[in-house]
Image 1 (cartoon, rainbow over the protein chains, first blue to last red):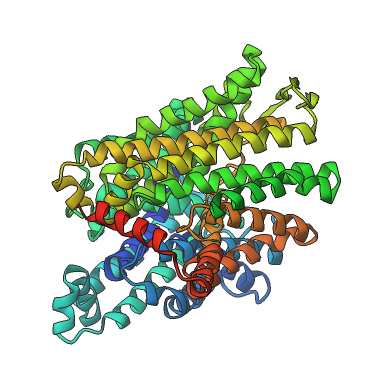
Image 2: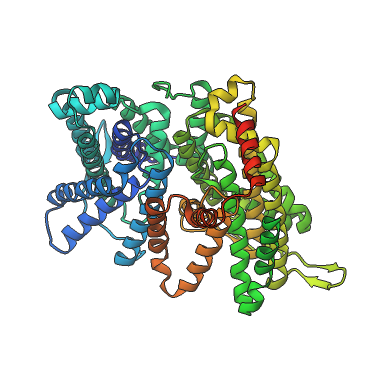
Length: 287
Length: 336
């Protein structure tokens, strides 16, 4: 357990945290507006990675252009899923769970059938490293944080300033009130699904570039994103950011400091401790 | 009476099915079938209080590893390790039940998913005890027992083991059915239908919810123990029997069969497990088929196969006065 190893784990965990944030923001946006928990969101994250793989490997497009295209493609796919499957179950619990379970099975194995179960690699986001406070940092980790941060800031600004963003916030706070003001809740639902799916795709593409692409890569970030929501980020962008960085650092540092066994049990212990003290989560609204 | 006859026929059919199909291969598959039946049925028990678990295989894992480790290291016989494994799984359920059941339904689903992934990762990483990534091998089988009239049954062979599993599963389903029909079951339904009301009339809601969760975990653990000795080897890879995907399969069994009728999940589990085996040539496409079925059934057949069948039955034969009184009684008891 050298200081270098700890520093590396810290940097990795911090970058990982931003991927979780992209995931959790999308989940909480969808849930806030439609009251649907999209358990297949991890698969959209994974699809984002594979769309970028197709664009870079077959069409030889630039990596960053591919990420933007993948966000649009996967966002549109999410919108289709919303219109075709999820919309009719707005506000329900059980049916959306089953639909997303079905989607998870379909999408994962569709990717296994198409690309095989072996890992695929994307081009690197950046080569080499630079020195931060006298310690080395791989550049690609910095790019992950920068891209994710830019997306989060853009979303935050849109929610605060833009007409549609404000309409979405209003739909979360009071669906009836929003409707009385002439806000189309179905449109807001579709918009949230598009935005969330695009964010997930960006996360998956970044993850695929820093780590590897596998058909099952979406499961862990999904679980982390859900945990962030339970811890109380629902409806609060800063809450999600804090929760995501916390979980990312936990994932980065705990295996090195405590060993893999304890590291795997820690998130559950943290969540249980929080729920024992505050059943509505740290920033909860009492839902 | 008709129900009892139906159950006898079903159990009889399950007992002879692999014989008719006629190879050791089918005995292995039907062992998986009955284990899946128990898992899906115990998942349905949680449905009675309106909770849906996305991590049922986590408790199956606890049962499987407990029974396997006890018989490998302590050399205990199966009639000791299997019940104890179920108890350990129930105990783990009890440990997490209170914080999990305090939160709203959707959070409960999330927490069970987290719990299942956590126990899987613990099993995957705890090298000294669970064998880590390599897993456990050489799990002993059950040996043999003398049964009056039949003679010595070699339970260690796939045929014998199937009957052991079948007996355990049928008994477990009987217990689950009795519980559901008892006062306890009525309280569970009252919690599902109107939790605040149940609380207001003095039902200790939390205690009943915890009892429900712990019972479901007990039977998941039992199924896991049966699985461990059938497989003789365990591992906790993400793609293994204990991955998040398998909990999802269980939900599909439940929904395709229909979560309303008691035997719905059992029928769903049997049908889909057998279909999956028959379609073995297209192993990779299996999840696509199962996932598509789940979505189609949800959209077009919200009561599942058994629900649809019994609806049809009711249309053909309207309920007799006796059952009608029973239903009225049930409704009366529910609203009081």
